[in-house]
Every structure is written in structure tokens, then in C-alpha cells.
Length: 147
Length: 298
Image (cartoon, rainbow over all chains, first blue to last red; front, top):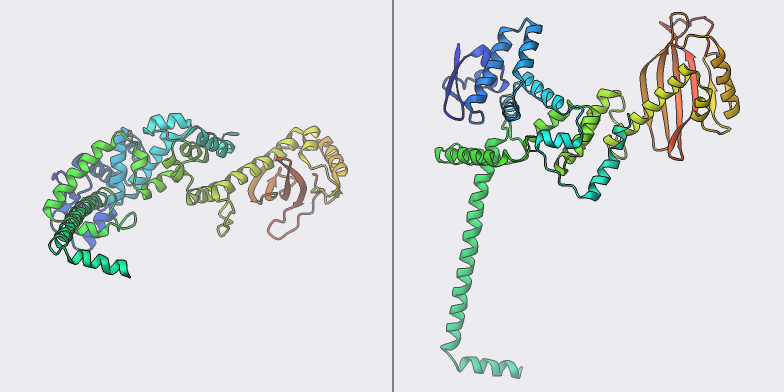
């Protein structure tokens, strides 16, 4: 049973139902009988949708091989920030829990062990604190650095 | 009254002049009102587009952020979809200059933050004001508390919020760990500094003996440190309850096959900017309901 998904840039992807229903959003559409025609996904572009569908397909194929799946996931999530951002939004919109979790874990790993300045650089955050606020915040968080 | 009547006489004596002024004024007012209404309606239509923009770009599982659901219906018309798509593209290009974390939908941010440990969460809060707000979220720290410490105290509402409570708990747990390090090192000077120098402090060793008052307590430790016992023990199930000036911690210690395990309770008081131990109680743990009859050493 194949489903047709349409990305925001009007590209059609044909996928097995088993693969597509990894997305809870698509799953409920199928269950409600709304999946007979092409399913429009206006919030996901074709580049991201292709990645997402690859994730879903591999999760169906490698379901029983935990080690192989983990290897795949680790390789899959090695993407640049912009792609990671799109994956996070797509996983949230399509409600694919394991993709969302893996992407969040990647964000956490990116930040681990970094100083605030390094985090700003990594995430492109602009510091908008006044010197007084900076001092206040430094004191507020001193306890976390006392190890 | 006379002034008023004289005024009306003046007015009525110039029949055409006054109505002209009044008409002119009315015209001016109308023009003014018209332009204001036009600008308001154009702003309104702009906000509708913005609303759709937000609705389209943010997650729509069931409404997302608080409202904007009305706009979703308007978005399904083809012209609106076109507008939304182009607006979204423009917005995305504008946004690549700013940071990814700041633009994530609140629910994704909350989820992502739950994967951070406490140092990372603190450091993230130091980056800018938006991140500070997100990373200081009370629920995020409550979840971290439950993850790192205990699922107990779920119904507690800490006076200064969960981040402060987490910090205080972290401090107490570290001090409690220090206590056991002092025992492992058998350092009497360190133990002397650790206890509050007061007559109400008490120590009940696992032997069952109670020592009361600072001097007696420290002497009891001096004796305990002279024993050749293996001091390789593990501390588990540490549960801390922290108030502003006082804290108590319960735990289990597992020494070796011959002695222990023990139930231990430590109490601390906050004086002069630091925590001091004021009470220690160690007792043999009953296993499966049977009281183990054995020689126990502190």
C-alpha cells in the first residue's frame, strides 16, 4: 500500500504506508481515511522530506538490528546546523518521536562542555546583556561551575 | 449670561461665515478619520498575513503557541498559500542571520533543553536574554531535579523556584559526599572543621553509641579512625531535603560482605555562609525483615 506525499515545493514522494506511518501525523491521517489522495506537507521542503523518509525507511528495515540502527542514526545526524534545524521542525510537525529525540540529543551534544561564549559562536547567538546584567548572571550561575 | 447672548447675536449676524467654517471642519475631520481607518485596516491585513506566516511556519499539530488558529482557514485559499510561502521564504532568509535555538517553536525548545545537563543549561542561560528565559524555565529545572536526584518532592513548590532548589540540593549532596571522603581519608582535622562547634550536635554511630556535644563527637571520630576497618564503602539512594538554613539527607551505605548495609541520616545547618554537620545517625539496615545479629563497627 503506497502513499503519496507532497513537499512544500510541490515534489511528490511515493512511499510505503509502513514507512510513512512512522510519522504519527501521517498515521492519524491514514486512520481517519484522509490519505486517499496526495497528502500535502506544506511545512516540509523536498530536501528535508527526502532525509526524513530515508530515516523512516531505515527504521523499518533495521528494526530488529539495534546496533546497525544506532550506527545509521549516528551517521544520519552528522549534518550542519541549518539541516538539523529543518529536521527538528519536520520531526516535530510530522510527529516522529525517535527522529526528534535524536536531533535534540545532537543539539545537547553540540553544547556540552562549551563556555557561554563558545555556545554563542556555535549557535550564532548575539549577546544582549549589559555589563551589570552579565555580572548578575555570572553570580547566579556560579554554583554550576564549582566542580 | 449676557456674554452668551451677545455671542449668539454675533454668530447669527454672520449667517454664511459660520456654516462654512463648520463644514470645513467637518470635512477635515472626515479626511483625518478616513486616513486613520485606512492605515489601521492596512495594518490589520498585514497582521493577518503575519498571523498566517506564524501559523504556517510554526508547528501545527493542534494550534501551537496560543492562538492564530483562525488564520489557518484563511491560509488554505491558493492566493493565501502563495503569500504564506513567499513570506516564509523571505522570513527564513532574514532569520539565517539570527540563531537557530532562538527561533525554534517553544515546544521543541523545551524538549531540546531536557537533554542538557545542569552545567550546559546554566551556560546556555548566560548567552543572551532570550536563552536566559528559556533555560531558566521552572519546569525544565524540575524535570532535571527529578532526573538527577529523586522523583520524590513532586508536590513541593520551592520558594525560590526549581533552579535555585536544584542548586541548593546539588550543594548539599556535594557536602554529604565530602563527609564520606573525610571518613575514607580518616582525616581528623577535616572532620573537626566539618561539624558545627556547638553543644547540641549529636552523633550516633552504627555501634549504637550516642555522643553529644562537639568535643565528644570529635573524640568519637578520633576513635573510629584508629580502627583498621576497610573503609571501602558505597553510598546509594541519597535523598536530600533542603530548606534555607537546614537540610537533612538520608542514604544507605554498603561497606562489605561482613558489615552493613546501614541506614544513615545526616543533618546540616547553615551558618556564616557555609553548611555544617549537626547530626549523624547510622544504624544497621534490616534485610527481609530479619535483624542481622552481627558485630558492627562505625
